Length: 203
Ligand SMILES: NC(=O)c1ccc[n+]([C@@H]2O[C@H](COP(=O)([O-])OP(=O)(O)OC[C@H]3O[C@@H](n4cnc5c(N)ncnc54)[C@H](OP(=O)(O)O)[C@@H]3O)[C@@H](O)[C@H]2O)c1
Image (cartoon, rainbow, N blue to C red; front, top):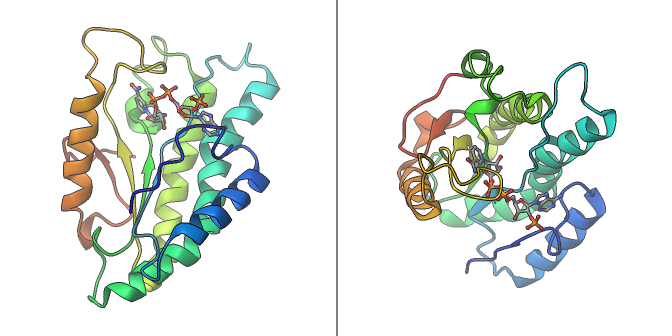
């Protein structure tokens, strides 16, 4: 069964109570096999730099892009654990139980520095760097449960956030690429950072 919480009306990830309510609802729909794939996709893009970013934008961005995924993973963890146990196969793989955090090269410290003048999106980049760190640390915590956890960059995509640049990917191309990557994930990608083509990215 696929359950899509499509937007903030279904689960407002900047609000831990909303996440709790959604987890309860989803839990009541899931069968005894639990939840085998959780994708944290929701995010906001606020731009600004040291001298002009309003503190509120910084807080909203962190609440949505970093704390949100953390609370989502915590609230949905029992269902992911159920799926990992129910699978009956040893090791870590995406067929069994997995958390995919949709991140961005904008959160890669080694990639963003050369792009920062062109893309001055300090709150977004800092929050996605935080999400990357969270992914690596949560991967350590989830290893004993044999739940795969990794960060995935969708590419630059024609969406509300990505804009209409004709060099950007169509949504379909990005999503098909990400699904191919997700299906191919094995234990050696646990705790890693990749893009929609399957390339490993630097943190
Ligand atoms: N597009 C790109 O080029 C690009 C590049 C790198 C990474 N990414 C990442 O890819 C993911 C998807 O981005 P996108 O391009 O599809 O962005 P988008 O077009 O702006 O869509 C963002 C989605 O997140 C939801 N959302 C925002 N705040 C939320 C909240 N507090 N609670 C629940 N849902 C919330 C929005 O819901 P509403 O419809 O209700 O607003 C919307 O469905 C994000 O994690 C983004 O950082 C995108």
